[in-house]
Image 1 (tube, chains in turn yellow, cyan):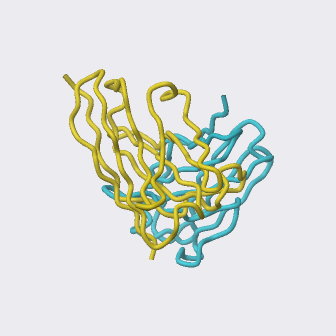
Image 2: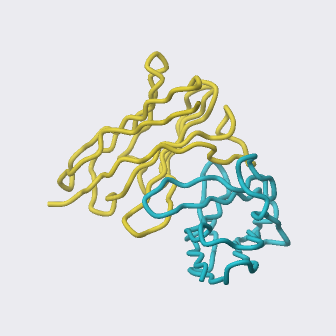
Length: 124
Length: 106
């Protein structure tokens, strides 16, 4: 059974940093691309970042480039989202999601499994 | 940038058919997925590759495309189908979501 468990959310001041974790079980991380998708309170879904299962290459949304970084620890079967220089508009629930294929570069891809999300609040 | 446009809300009576559209430039050249999200829950994929349905999803959910518009159809809507629905497409190493449609069954 695929399971994704996010952690690391919390309240942080603007300009601060947080590191989110997503512990995966039921599959091997290198077999699938993984992503972070966020949802601001009462708003829609926004893709944030992805990491390809094959080569670990990362992809970031323009809104977070230069501030966020995604990585993984294969030994712990965990992916991370390092968030720096946080802004008020980064306030959201952050979901970890499994992509349909190993390679992120797949036009027919879909997010097959989602975690329960972790809330990040950026406020002074 | 690539954008996907959905109607903010759609209403349907129980047992009737609801259609939710998703439009975008050259969407017809891409694959569309659809997600259902109920209050306080994580999204769940209900349609992928335009029209395919995961085995656990009821047959009353179907997807189709025509030109640059993808459509999610809920045939014989039930009260438990009341939720937010999002379309999604992959474009040049990014994923784009539509703004979401709130389906009300009443």
